[in-house]
Amino acid sequence: MATMQPKPVKAKPLKTRSLIFTLLICSSGIAFLYLVSSLVSTHGFSFPAPRLFYRALHHKPQRRLHTLHDKYLYWGYRIDCPGKHCDSCEGLGHQESSLRCALEEAMFLNRTFVMPSRMCINPIHNKKGILHPSSNASSEARWASSSCSMDSLYDIDLISETIPVMLDNSKDWYRVHSTAMKLGARGVAHVEGVSRLGLKEDAAYSNLLLINRTASPLSWFVECKDRHNHSAIQLSYAFLPSMAAGPLRDAAEKIKALLGDYDGMHVRRGDKIKNRKDRFGVARSLHPHLDRDTRPEFILCRIEKWVPTGRTLFIASNEKTPGFFAPLSVRYKLAYSSNYSEILDPLIQNNYQLFMIERLILMGAKTLIKTYKEDDGDLSLTDDPKKNTNNWQIPEYTMEDGSCPIRKVGT
Image (cartoon, rainbow, N blue to C red; front, side, top):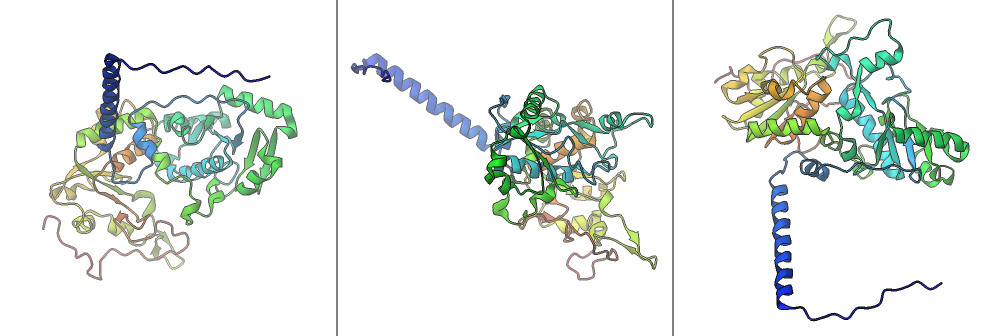
């Protein structure tokens, strides 16, 4: 059967009035595009972030529809589980590395990622007092009391604009799972020890509705070993921080507006400055200079060439000593998230949410100083490597090489 084609219509000469109307419409469109581009250009960041981060500030993402015509990837109902971290629960950064690895594989395989609906909260990183599991509670009840919903941390719809995602407590996932189980070997494969390239190129996997992946028992992120090969990285480290849930992004924007023009500094102490004694009773540390380098007198010396006197300095830190950074006020106007309790208290339920807001604020700083140098262009408080797993050294508290002379605070 021949396909019907619409008959060509002869063009009629435009009347003068129609031409003027068309020109007005075109000029209005150009003006609108110019306005939008100027708005976007005023929200630049000195800290690298994906383009989606800018879009997140200006529009509400559309909810994605999931169908049985799509293909799905499932790694487990908890991050890093099954494995050695099933019960221990690592910090937010560790879990984000694992989650990013799983998302990258879904991206590589062109599949929708079935994301755990909850993230465990390490008690070390939580001071909000929400974790009160009963000793008589079931394992599921304890899990619920020591975790938070994933969509309270991340904007799932915004993530889905880059990698399609569904939560594992959704009706969509129930439908996909039920269908895959009914199809049996034609619908689902349980795989372990297969590379992502193998999953993509082998037709035995590539055509299935669902791949149930068992990742490394050490951590999910071990599946992404080649992080030093930048060409192998599909998602930047800034991706998940910029995908924060809408209420968290809104709170960060309000605080940034109140701060105005400011610089930012992330100071990680707490868990990183702990020492242990060797068999001779000598204290040793994996980060021998960190305690020294993150004290106020050393910070003043280190950052004076980066942050001019009189600037507003926003500090995010896990240091618990009240007033620890107060000596920095001789040179800078100090600001902390605790200064904005009227914005944060009604919203924050755990420290993961608080840290995500602080990261967004740090992203907006004119000059950002990190604790560790992670990339070549980073400004950092210490030269100690961030990852040091087996070299325990004696901590140092003085600067012997004269590279940063110690002076009394205020001189």
